[in-house]
Amino acid sequence: MRKKFLLAVLVLLVVLSAQAFAAISGDPIKNYDLPMLITNAGQGPGGKLARLLVSQTKTIILDTDYFYESEPERPELVTRKYSCLMVIIGSTDKGLGASGITIEDEIQRLQRVVEVCKEINLPIVAVLLEQDKRASGIPTNANERCIDLICPNAEWMIVVKRGNSDGRFDEIKAKYNIPLTIIDSQSDFIALAKKIFNR
Amino acid sequence: MSNETTAKAPVAFKTKVILLIIMAIIAFFAGKEFWELRHYKETFVASEDLTQVKWLSDYLPSLKGTWADTPIYVFDSGVEGGSVFVMGNVHPYEPASSITTYVMLENIHVTTGKVFIMPQGNFSGSTMGSIGGAYPKYVHIETEWGEKTYKIGSRESNPLDQWPDPFTYVHYPDGQNLAYQDIRNMNRTYPGREDGTLTERAAYAVMEFIRREKIDISIDIHEASIMYPVVGTYVAPDSSIDIAMMAAMTLSDSVFDMKCEASPKSLKGLSHREWGDYSDTLAFLMETPEPFIDRITGPITENLMLYGMDEFLVKAAEKGLVYVDYPVSYWGVEGEPMWYRVGRHLSGALEAINWTGLFYDDKAVEVTWPTYDDLAENGLGYYLHDPALAENIDRVQVVYHKPVSVNN
Image 1: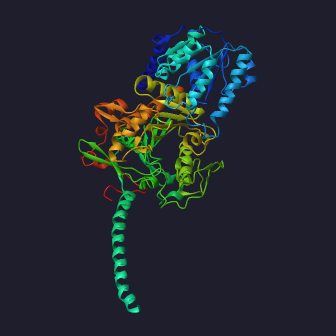
Image 2: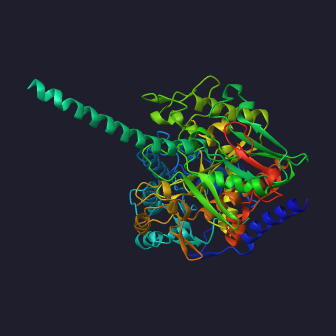
């Protein structure tokens, strides 16, 4: 019982600290209506992580207020009037290549997504949550290629602090005039989501 | 001419005999080294919570008497709850995984549910070093009462137990083509087959064990090179990925950086894919950073295994070519030390178990063992007990491919 209580306290602490002490800095938070769509660039688990974190708000409900599609194409993008498309950048370290998917295939798919978004005026919010994904010394790293494609076409960038330790997103902000908001940790995305969607 | 030939012949014969004797002496001493590792028996002082010892062959009798049989230690609280399976050394050249299980085995306390621990997942693989690896046979952990010795094995099963390898390994049942040596890689042979190769049979027995014991949470412990992206991470399939993500986030926010990777659906034979596909268990695989198995290091020594410090990897890290913080620095020692890797696994496993209980009440297991913070404070050796002490003698267990007593 004592262990259970301690665990409950731990969960509460994670959620509360994420909400009460969320460290969010950089450009002002943008606001969007609901529903919105979450997807990923690079076939990594970041999209699922964002889905999980938004669900932790308890006020933004999956399959009602927001939807998740791992590989959306035109039909999935136009099926509802989404307020924005949150593209969570993060390549799979385990799957690409090993499971027969190439980064070239993924980049081509993302290019199609970007084109459809432009066509239907669906704003893209580029998000990097997986702080340790990037090996910034390798420009051809799948994550870097996804960043190169998605961020210049985004309306807003949200990046976990350590993911920008080399200033990569500051450079994109300066070059393309795209606002950049920094969160200290992944769990801060919970509080940020509440503010973005006013829930 | 004929006389000359006759005169030289005995000399040539003598030379051949001498060379043969020299070769035999070299072979004897080399063979002795191989024999020692093949037959080395690791021991541990079991926690007082140990309730039963099972064997992998209990779940597939054809493994009995083979080098793939291996003990499974059961800790049953007697209180209804979930069940956990922790597996070490499916790749025995990643010894932080087996040492993690030994720390668990010596210090575990279970108050709800059952815990099953298998320290040598691929026992056959623990009986040799990697072919061409030319690295030390053992790693020694210092304790207050002396040194504790653990094997550094191979990635694959020993060819003495399963040979020859095919030209291409075709995974059963999916038919995916894999590298030839992966037919001896237990973490490429799940779900295994009842009448397959020794490694496939061992994998099948693990699946049978998970199914028959209705294991709720299965944790496969590994290590990875730091230039490999899948390091310092959980890998989990869809069924357990939300739990793994919450566990990773909790660890990253409070103790150490932990990533989370999704198990690819089309990558076959791995525990994090097949355990969940062929049973109802929630599967987790964990990786810690092990510079010893990186390909660009200098001498591959016991110090490299113990402390993980290498100047070439430091250069690689400076150029952004590694996927973890490197080197980490503790108590003035830089590298990726053994205590750090074991500590990561101990806390990583606990976090996965605890979060599973929060997601699913009926799978809750209440268990304690030393954590990362404990090892940071007291060191690794502190949690390995002296088998010679009177109060410990009756609790000493020998880990071998068949039951043996302490004195054998």
